[in-house]
Amino acid sequence: MIHALGILEANALMLLLGYFLLPLLGFRSRPLVDRLLLAYAVGLAAGGVLAATLALVFIPLDAPVLFVAVVCVFAGWWRWGRHERSSATVPALDAVSAIVLAVPVLLLARAVTLFAVRPLHEFDGWVIWATRARALYEFSGPAAPVFTDPTYPALQHPLLLPALEATDAHFMGAWDGTVMHLQLLGFAIAFVGGSWALLRPYVWQPLLAGVLAAVVAAPAVLDQLATNYADVPLALFVALGVAPIALWMTYGERELLVASALFLGAAALTKNEGELFAVCALAAAAATGGRRRLRPVAITAAAVAAIDAPWRIWIATHHVKISEYSISDAFDPGFLRARWSRVGPSAHELLTQIVRIQAWGYLVALALVGVAGAFVVRAPRRGAFVSLWLLLSFAGMVVIYWISTNPVTNNLYNSSNRTVDAIVVGAAAAVPALLAPVEAMGSSRGRAERHEPEEAAH
Amino acid sequence: MARLETLGSLQKALRLTAPPRGLVPTIAALCALAVAIASVIHTGPKVDRRLRHDRATYAAMSKHDRETLYITSLGLPPDYFAWYAQYVGRGDRLFYQVQPSGLGEFIDQPHAVEDVGRYALLPAKSVDSLSEANTVVTWNQDPALLGVPFDGQQRLGLQLFFVSRIKK
Image (cartoon, rainbow over the protein chains, first blue to last red):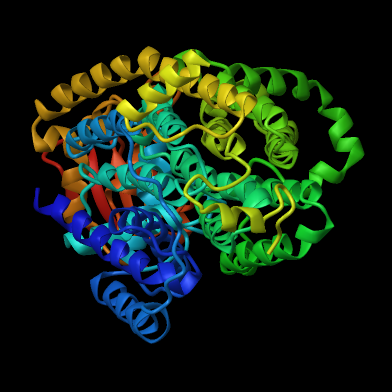
């Protein structure tokens, strides 16, 4: 119980970090509850990025360092942020949304009671992720040979999740694998709260509440979150990063791109597939947004790259290789031709996992309604963006299985149910954005008219 | 028209936020909401049952059993690792000498012991060659078979479980 309090303290400080960061990053002001919900999501992502980056230079994000970070951000907020009051107009919470929102809230509350006693159990959860987290706690950084020698598995995975767990261990004063899952639950809370607070001014809120409920109630989400694998945290960050881009196509609000940059950057540091999903999202935005949107998309891409760069530099300077595949093989026609037989089974199995109702409920049907709906509600850019992101992401996943040196059956059997998480959750979570009206739900008519639908690009 | 007025009254009664303007956007949003709620109804109760069941299972276990579940679920006895941990620590580079044997459907005993040791015996680090190691962790084998000199050795009773310091 004492250890669980340590995790709570660490996350409370990350909430404060996010709270003071909100105006500094350009997020518009919101009612207090929404501000706190968004602050936790922003704080978790920013705290995770900070922990993962500082770890590379062997500085642990322990209590003193996190406190100093909060004080620094507070000083910035005091100087530049506290008077900035560009407000998002947020509609009042209606009865239907409140009832529907009760579902994820109750499920997450139930999950707290489980995650507080859930031990490490699933193989990769402790062999890969907990070992890396505990090593970061013990050594303050990615010490050799734990993070550099192929004796240890999955060296290519970046450090955000283990660095956050190491931070929790510093707050606990010891490593305790039996309560560490509470930190994983933080990702689900950040996803629900962050999506709700960020998207509510722009979308129809009963639909937003329904989609968040459907995502949290999908069996794969909480089941996999309880395994200490990084796939669901990755999926939740990707979802938080993709939906705002779709909305930005119409509303052009800067805060939406800032959110995308932060959450896609955090996704890139959560698991190596995160880079793929982020690149696909930014490429899809560039391809479907039109020439006027290229510059803001390029700036967002630069921000994501800046977040990811320290890890990539560390990987390069320490000559850490991905043991299962080499990206350069994807550009070798001979290699690809020789392994062509892997493409069919990979695509088929990934698709099978995506449409599994036992794992995802009706999230895929929901995403299809959203994409089709975007075209009929005259938001073709949003529809095209999400469709292209999905196609590129799926193709990217197939390519990874195509060039992998692992036996294909074994590879798919061990991972395909998890690697599709970001695709399914990202697509479903984008539905409220896809079907958002052409003017923001809470906006005054005057503001809405400033934005020509699907054309605004700030 | 009367039907629209009825919908309007219902919307006010429920304090429901107005859906997007226009018939087509409204229908699209309502369809999506219906699918989302159908999904919640389909999966929500199952997830809730699963959470309650798992909570009951794990809460009934002792702290020690929960701490070592990842070891016992592999089919290994956990207490040997607690014994090893008394004699290894920061700065140690461990080489595992493990009795070759199968263990489970997807892993053999040497790999299982090494995997557990890499996590459980931190901050001691693992290496894959004897020449890089300064300590040998032995699981049901005779350390003398390695042919290296030791300058200190711990043995678990009369069992073939050892922690041996390599003489440099």
